[in-house]
Amino acid sequence: MVDRSQLREYDFLKEPATFEPQQLREYWLPADKGGQQAALIEKEVGNLRAKGLHYGPKSRRVQFEVLQVHIDPPGDEARVQTRERWYYEVYREDGTRYEAADQVVGDVEPFQYYRLRKLDDRWLVEWNSMSEYGYAGNTHPPSGPTHVAPK
Image 1 (cartoon, rainbow, N blue to C red):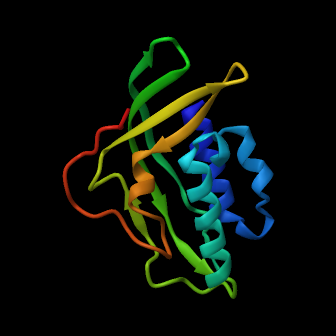
Image 2: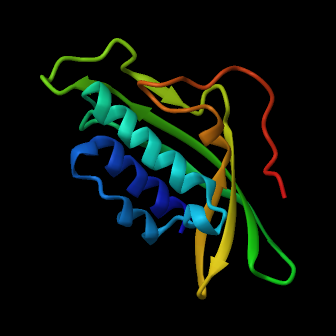
């Protein structure tokens, strides 16, 4: 589920003009239920739209591996650790490359952490560590220690 959510998020960033907030219900915990990631995705898609930017067609997942899953009692919260690398390139609406293009996310921060919550018998992403850094057209991952998913 985490891997599919991340691919879907990339779809939003590639096509911000077609994004609708209700699409977030598929994989993300709603903000009114405590979901932080859904609000951040919506904000970032809005930032890309406002700047006339989008991720290019060659943007893709380079590596994705689930390393650890821990379900917290009573069984409605979980923490997932992954190793991920993503390539992205950013373009303006007119098709020219944005100056921050051609980044590989994961070289600086090779481990990602996700917090999931079960809602109506479905696991949804509440938070992930990459969201602390921002996205292309906004900010980029800083160098620094690996983050641990807060409980």
